[in-house]
Amino acid sequence: MAYSNKAKEFYVDALKGIKDAGTFKEERFIESPQAANITVEYPVGADTKKVLNFCANNYLGLSSHPDIIKAAHEGLDLRGYGMSSVRFICGTQDIHDELERKLTQFLGTEDTILFASCMDANAGVFDVVLDKEDAMISDRLVHASIVDGMRLCKAQLFNYKHMNMDHLEEKLKETQDCRFRMIITDGVFSMDGDIAPLDRIVELAEKYDAMVMVDDSHATGFIGKTGRGTHEYCGVVGKIDIITTTLGKALGGASGGCVSGRKEIVDLCRQRARPYLFSNTVPPVIIAAANKVIDLISKTTDRRDKLENNTEYFRKKMTDAGFDIREGIHPIVPIMLYNAKLAQDMAHDLYEEGIYVIGFSFPVVPKGQARIRVQISAGHDKEHLDKAIAAFIKIGEKYRILGKKKKEIIEMYGY
Amino acid sequence: MSDDLKKLIIDYVKHEYLEDEAEEEIDENTPLISSGIVDSFSMVSLKTFLEKKFEIKIPDEKATTETFDTVNNIINLLKEFNIA
Image (tube, rainbow over all chains, first blue to last red; front, side, top):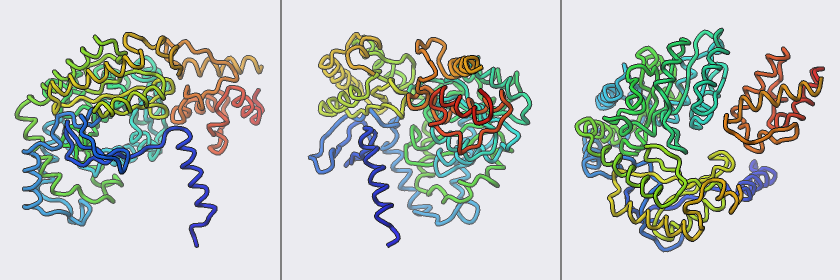
């Protein structure tokens, strides 16, 4: 047998190592559509439980919106289920072209190309536009998919301390001899909800003749006055050379991603980006629904406005209650607990209270930075937020952390 | 020489990896990577710094997370290049 005992034992040990380190990930089965109210079977085999979902990237509450579901049905009826092809053979329909044009207009860029996911967009784009005589200068906390994309590219790699513009400037000075430089950042950082200072990044890019690439997956659809993203929020629409983003979060949450930006870069991606060339096309049902999503959020800002109000309300009430929250305006609200076990235990207790949240610890976040990441949605109503706040206060009291800051929590529970 | 070298690397690590307001102290035995101060992705700048400073090329198989985990380990690596 080719699958030897030696190999099997090796993998068993690897799994045991993950479990011993406390980082083994388990899936929870959801037996309802994605929404604020969901039905969950956890652990597997347990009775199902109705809980409020506070850990989805469903920022605009569109994942199960009736208009989006209707558009998906129409897409299925009119354009079929699958395309059985990559884009450039026979996998491009009129609705794919329509969505690329709509995304270009929405993001305020020159052109857009769809990928099977934003992971694929990030994996493919750097290798297309940069080579070994070039430099990639990235924020140190960029998403894993960007790290993988940079690893697949031959350009020299530099990185700067998280959102530290002085350090970025040092790196730009250090790389003056390179042919092309690209500053690479998330628009919004997924674990902290931090918003990159794109205005200052663009300023430095112009001063040192560098391009700018932004992954705006946690911003497209709701950050900025009309929800265009971090570039709108920072006042630099039209000045970002490459934006990658996803359809898998605020924009309906199904799947698919894109590279949007300078026309020549998008054209080159169509010729050379390997995940585009060798992945199947995004299926018609998703494209039809995504077209509807863009129509909907271009017409009115009601949903992003509701999300903004929900976020402000939740952040204020939780701060008033004495939780240690990273400041900001983003619907990602990190409740800082510092100790990994405390984060796990509190998330478990909150689930028992009917609030579905997840504790994050090293290696997903830096050591000693464990937290519960709450994600607010336009799909939440005030009563949902109030229920979650009440549950947090109850559990916060149980663990005696209300009103306590970092130093005191660490004194009580350790790192 | 070794003390100067130690100081040079510690100063670089502090400047490159610690936040300005960080209170952590680093000495030659402080775990850098296994403690999470330096992640494996950011380690590349330390490698590039050493290569430029001493005009050497550290082969990938030697640039492991173990070799870079403490300043002492890094000094031992540099000894192989007759530095330190």
